[in-house]
Length: 47
Image 1 (cartoon, rainbow, N blue to C red):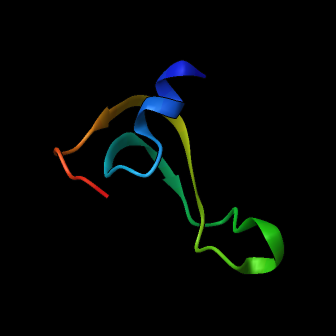
Image 2: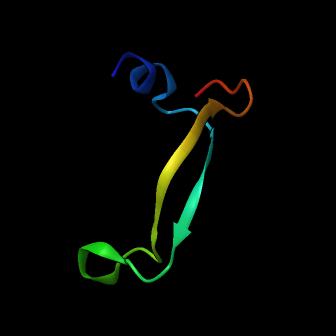
């Protein structure tokens, strides 16, 4: 949870498997990212 808070409101790089067939929450999203293997800050941006 500490890493998630550190990345809050930042651009992130997420590496995983995109599943277009699992569009959860009434189809509002085009799919989901699952089997995530990497989550890193993408670049230093101030918001």
